[in-house]
Image (cartoon, rainbow, N blue to C red; front, side, top):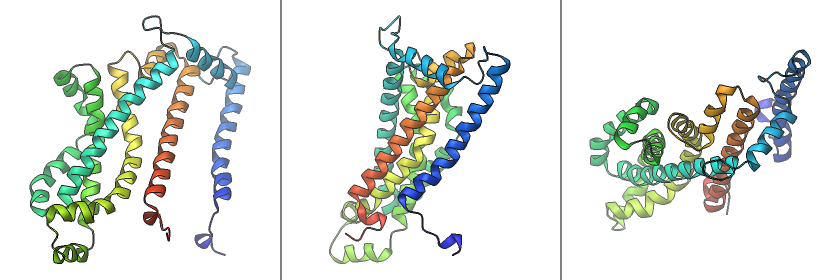
Length: 271
């Protein structure tokens, strides 16, 4: 049987996916062990025990200023900023994307503007945001929104605009107006795509969040990573990066489960 025709089951897929992760971990352990054999004080590739100890200290050590546990305060602050940015961007993508996709005059008027904003590197706008909005939470959330919303809007608009024309004609035959077509025809079919767009935006959203926190913040996962780098504290940086990856994976899995539960028809389910 050709590989292109082979179907991989869930358990087999999990096993195959674990192989490169385990191989990468093994390579790291070997390299770290070699470095520590030559220099027990090596900070570049910390051993798992050192990383676990450092992370445990971060989890139970209170911040001298706020009194909050450092690790959990960083996590909560980052998730609040990320959640607010993703929420605003998702709402904008849904509303603006639907309007652009359903109404050609609006698409012709605002489409070029959305495209122009989407191609601007969001990090380049960070100084402008800090000058205009200050160094508080607003600028950090705005960077996430500006970074992902235009791309999501374009994706939703293109998806809605590519819906079969027959659906629009049939809805008008039944007496539906433009807004009824938008709500009754386009919206249900745009929702699975919106979740998919949100999943794809998670990676860039984390990048913009970490960038903003690294430049101007006093709490957050990105702030902590860039704070301890001056001390070469890889035993803190690597666990923090791994924690960010786990949070992103959990969010992606949650969105996938939501999409399959709410819109089974979009995933090939027969009922």
